[in-house]
Amino acid sequence: MKLNINSKYPSVSDLRKRAQIKIPKFAFEYLDGGCNEDVNLDKNRSDLRKIELMPHYLSKFDQVEMKTTLFGHTYDAPFGIAPIGLQGLIWPNAPEILARAAVNHNIPFILSTVSTASIERIGEITEGKAWFQLYHPAEEAVKRDLLERAAAVGTNVLVILADVPSFGFRPRDVRNGLSMPPKMNFKNILEIVKHPDWAVQTLIYGQPNFKSLLPYMPKRLNLKGLGAFMDATFSGRLNEDRIAAIREQWKGKLIVKGIVSEEDTLKAIKLGVDGVIVSNHGGRQLDAGQSSIVPMMHLVKKYQKEIKIMVDSGLRGGPDIARAMASGAAFTFMGRSFMYGVGALGKQGGDHSISLMKKELQQVMEQLCCQTTCDFKNHLI
Image (cartoon, rainbow, N blue to C red; front, side, top):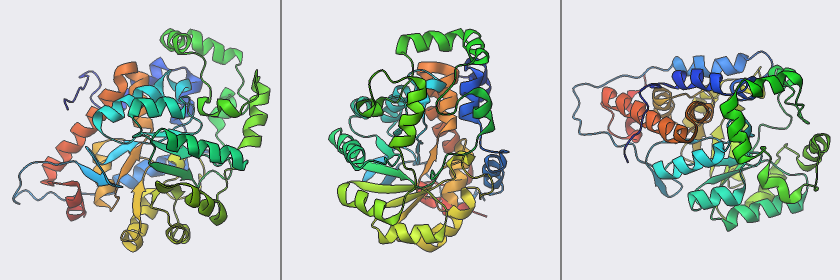
C-alpha cells in the first residue's frame, strides 16, 4: 500500500518532540519513562546501537522484500505494535487508531489486558487478526473468560507476561499520581487545561478505562476501589503450572513475553510454548537487568531451531529493526514509537508511523543490498 508520511515529522525523534507538546505531562511521562533511575531504559538503546551491519555493494541484487511469515501468516514487514497499558490515557482512542492502521498495513497489533479498548472492539477493527496479551488474573474464572472472549473474536496468538511479578517502581508516575489508585491533583488538572486538543479528544471518546475488564468490575467503582480491584484481580507471577494450564486451554499460538534467561526459555520449550518475546518491558521493570538485545542474541544461538525468538524494548525505527533481525530475531515489536506517532498526529499517527518504519527499513535493506529479511544475518558484523 501507499506509504503516507508527513514530511514535517520524518523521524521518531520528531514525533516524540511533537507528542511531548500535545500530551499532558503526567500521560507523556507514563509512556516515556523507565523505572528507578532509567539505567535499563538507556541501556536498551545504547546496546542496540553497538550492533553494526556490513553492506555488500557488489552482490547481485534485485529488490527489497520485507514480507515475513510468522505463525502461518505472512506480514508485510517484520515488525508489530507491542502492547501498552492505558493507551487511551496517553492519547484518546489510541488503541483503535493503531489497531486499524496495523490491519491496513498487515502487521500485528497486540492488545493489552489493561489497555483502554475492549477485546471485542479490537477484534472487530482487525477482523480477528490482533494478538491478545494476558495479564494473569488471580481468579480462574476471569482468566478462562478472557481467553474465551479472545478466541471468540478470532484471536489466534496469545501473549502471556512473565516480567510482571511486581510492578516496576517508577518515580515519575509516583510524582504524577499515576499509581493505583490514580490521583487527579491540581498539577495534573492544570496540565489538562494546557493541552486542549487532548482534553477535547478525551471528551469525545470518554474517560479512559480498562474496557476489557468492565464485565468483572463492580458497578460505580470509584478510584479508591479501582486500586483494590486491580490488586485483587491480578496475580502477575507466572509459573510452570500456570503456563501449562493456559497451554491446555488455548488452542492457538502461545507466546511468553519477558523471557531473558536460558532457564526460562528451556521451560517454555518443554511446556509447548510456540515463541518467546525477549523483553525487559521497555526498561520499566528491573533497572539492574540486561538490555533486551543482549540476552536475545545468546538465546538465538542456542534455541532458534526449537522456538520462535522475537524481541522488543529499545527499538525505535528501521535501523533498529535491521539490527535486531541481523542479530537473529524472528520478529520485532515496538511500543513507544507508535504511541509517539498517535500523540503527535492523532488519527493519522498510526498510518504515518508504520509508513515511516517501512520506509526506513526499506532504505536500510537497499543500502545493505539485503534482499529479504532472512538475509539480514549475512550482514551482521
